[in-house]
Image (spheres, rainbow, N blue to C red):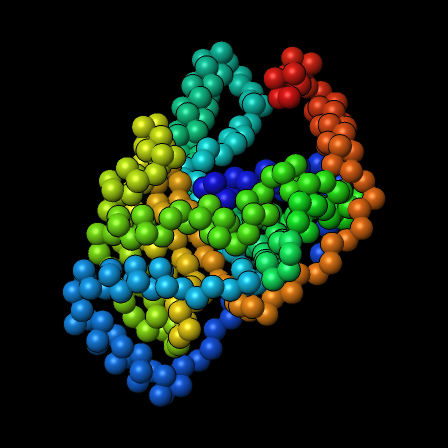
Length: 325
């Protein structure tokens, strides 16, 4: 949820500031691979739950280090039973007062029934590609995200960063733009998935299987343990939006790198589905940062101007404007 919220907010800011910018593969298994997969699955079936968890913890602890990587994020947030706008036909005519009253009563009843039924699930999807390079004296990153038809681009070199739109390119610092990925891939992963050892400790069941050259561990979590392990989840539960179900799948390649993380969490009022794919270990190159033509402070001024224009267009009261600010 936190990932979706931050991306939606960033997309809104970029759209208001300067408009939008222009602008996972699978491999068939060979018969030999399929045979190896079946053998690995059979072997995993013979392992106890404790043995698989111990093996997984060891894999996480001993993942090989790397200096650069490309990470693709596919995110989907679904909000349950979102009210829909209900339109009614206010025009009615009648030859008598009695028939008019009856028609009015039927319309009210129909409107009430429609309002009760006028809900549906709403889904927001996004895709982002991150590049991280820590091979030099300063961390370099780039990010291109697409959400609801809006594309955002960010680049950073050390503490310097830019935001690219279809108009201006805004310069600022990583602290000003305030995105976790500016702190590196480890910080990004912890923000996106939480501490993996903590997640593993919350497992109710675990399975292990071989998918081509990737070993996948699938954890079905105990909701109560998972909620207690995280302050935000605990707060959500206190406010009636508890975790109902949580499943994590972690994939490791033959070198021991985590190459995939799939996290699906269902809450009372919503659900999140996050897929992370990591590739190009130690071969990722971050493109040079584009030259900026406006500052972060000018971006803030542009955003304020866009909000003011929006308020005027919608004819909002000054009181509402002040509250919104």
